[in-house]
Image (cartoon, rainbow, N blue to C red):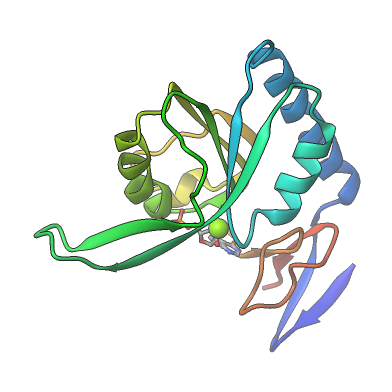
Amino acid sequence: MIVNVHDKKFETYISDAKIEEAVTRISNQIDQDYAGKRPLFLVVLNGSFLFAADLFRKLHVEAEICFIKLASYQGMKSSGKVTTAIGLDNPVKDRDVILVEDIIDTGKTLFEFIPELKERQPASLRIASLLVKPDALKYDVKADYIGFSVPNDFLIGYGLDYDGLGRNFGEILKLMP
Ligand code: IMP
Ligand code: MG
């Protein structure tokens, strides 16, 4: 399909069926890898909410879920930026944590947040990202579970937005030239 969002046109890039296939594959992998454990899913809002919901409802393993927002601001440290998780109320210490992202673009968001998360001493930490853009990656972040590797195009749908809109589409669409 072709849709208008704000001033731009987008066309189908990944169908609902392909997305469902990928989400099923990832949930099966997680079921296997975490058998006998009880992972804690940390979902990075807003973009990941649909992926996280679909992934979570397909799981068979016992699991908990917690939704967080990452806020960057200028801190007092000489390094400048500090990333904080809002809503991270579940204790992470000694838990098997799976961070859920919609897309890893440059990797900056997770690169800044992961050290903060590791300070809380999880037993293990893995990353599940529906999409990764290898050509855009600038920071050393590697996802353990990946739905799709995509080129450096701007995408919307299935949680991803363009200026607040487009999150409700069941498929992923890309910006038309
Ligand atoms: P990163 O910190 O550069 O990896 O960017 C991650 C965030 O940028 C994602 O969680 C998205 O919110 C946003 N983002 C990156 N690429 C896209 C895109 O193609 N469409 C919509 N949002 C994107
Ligand atoms: Mg995001």
